[in-house]
Image (cartoon, rainbow, N blue to C red; front, side, top):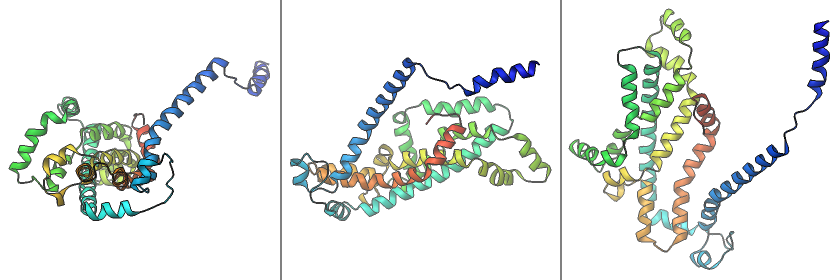
Length: 293
């Protein structure tokens, strides 16, 4: 009898729909409007830069139209031929890729150690490593450059790469994810005779693909756009990276806004492509590590 009454009571509840209050609807509408305005403000300069890179100088400074009347690629051809963009692009690719791969590997290994191993002083050491994130880079800039100069790495890409072989943020991100991996799975692999290296490369890393993808995007973006440290270390024009070459356009084309737009597009496009292809893993990795995108 009681079961029959529960079923009869559940019927009307299942057929009814939840209707949000008018106050809640107004709040959501205002929130969406604010987000749309912020999105428009953020995207508008980028859209202007895209179309400005295809305009002639006279049209850019005189016309207020967004779309160019006469499309041209002369800006890209001129900037690639005069400012040594191919060499800078190659230097940025080598530097960003090397640092990203090394930092991702060391962050995954250290995250695995701090998440799944027990040793004396583990939490204190982890706190000490994380505390380095609170130190401004300007504080360690001069001592770091003196060390690099003593190692004969100044004015070389290796001087930039060696300082990015590990990341405190990457350690934190990977440790947060590694803690969610079941320890029973690792113990079963040890019982079957798997070594610690095999467990790390064949079990842990494949399970951490999403978190690694998010970390790779973060590290690559930071190193691709890094300006201060390469400016201090690299002196020769043929060793410069894209941000340095792009900043040098100000002295060559201080009023040529179409040249700046073309140079900015050449710098931004590779990062956009990487983010587009890695968006799915990037968002999934952030959600699985407890961070908000």
